[in-house]
Length: 320
Image (tube, rainbow, N blue to C red; front, side, top):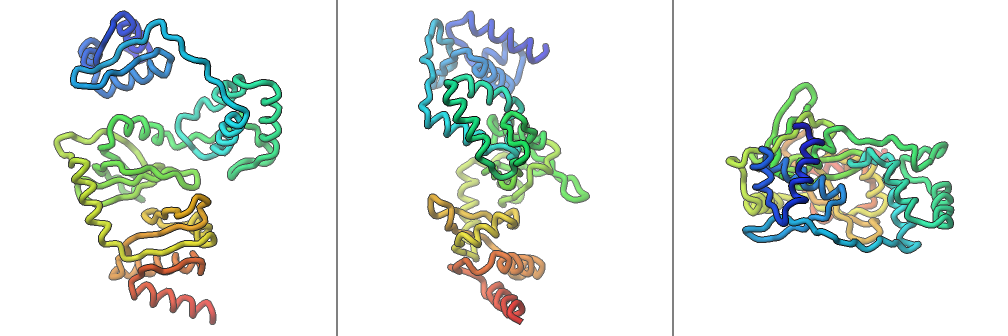
């Protein structure tokens, strides 16, 4: 049975019942749990008012004869939504294949005078990555790598993943527990806990070749993962305070595994914490050169002596 046909049949099935469970859908239509959950979510997105019940015997029931209140936005809310939507252009975000349809629906919710305001804003505001010769909101081509949306769909069901990655000339697979997804410079970065080597790994999502759920038999509990990560954090040997100029340099380039935490709402100061293998010459040289690239707008809280010596030597060379 094709997906569209199955969705329609399931809709008729649940609409004729006062109550149903995931297990019933699985048995009735011979599908996996993840497929059943995906189908129910898709049915909800189509407008069928389903209400979930928590508990051991919980499930779903259809809210019949329900009248949902009309959604109304204030003038400021409309402008906030529109500007936020404009700012996502060329950011390679998932779920935006229907960007034109979303924009048209947003515009249809507001008055003509509000539409005029938004047209003016669209003419005046240019965000990073916007083509100044064609800033039309409805003329966008910024779809992400095809595996990114698959990644999002999979991790909503399960954070234990089996990732196949293209690494230079080799193809490798890793069992990971997904910790975070970072979006930087229109690219997605995966931060995960390697369940085999029990350490944190960073991957560019563009290198993904395949994504599958990881075998339940070989998983670590989330609490175990958190404890192992805390043990790893104790090994941090480099802590820096970054000012606005250093942050600007960081945004231009930084090693994949290095992240910062902003320390004020304006994102003009930040903390950088990481571990550097000072006994690996290549890593020591690479990290020293990157610190010199960041510039002088930073304060050292903690730094290995070898890195400090290299940085001072580098600054002396610059002076000469």
